Length: 209
Image (cartoon, rainbow, N blue to C red; front, side, top):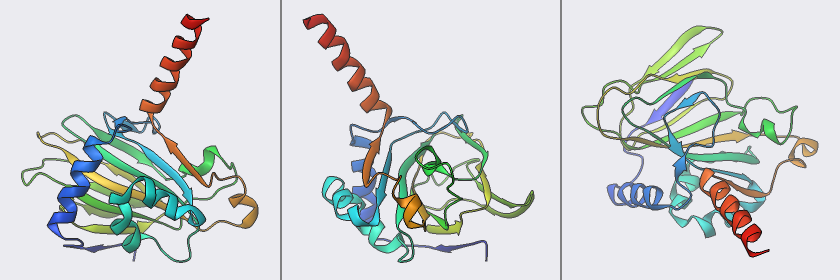
């Protein structure tokens, strides 16, 4: 099986809370991901299993998702909320987001995706999965569905052409050797909002000198 889905994965109360917290998060900004993510928003958390508690302390609204989605054999993770709206798309790629820390990393063992908010009348926005250039899945997102797919699949998201937001919570899950794990941050937040804040602080520092 290249992928499997679990509909109605969480309570509606949790889903509503999750959406509200993500959209209100100060780190939620124009995406820090690579050029494949066109017109999208989000932020990212890199962490090792040893620091799962740190993630849950700083972002308690992710806990229920992490409790259900994280696989016991995996020890390093790249977690990111991902928002697409009209005009957004994700071009074909294979996830290797931890490669910026360790060049020898292979694709994740699997990727989990929770569809937090999907408009009923969404046009476009399908997740397309490919193996060796052969399409093995085309998934129309459904709100409150938890999806798992093989980490070595090329995947993309078709352009969204309707109004409303398509919000998902994505986690790349890796099973790394000790030597690779050594290069991965125990806990690190990645956000363009943080970079903007650091730039403002540097400018203020120069003005004060």
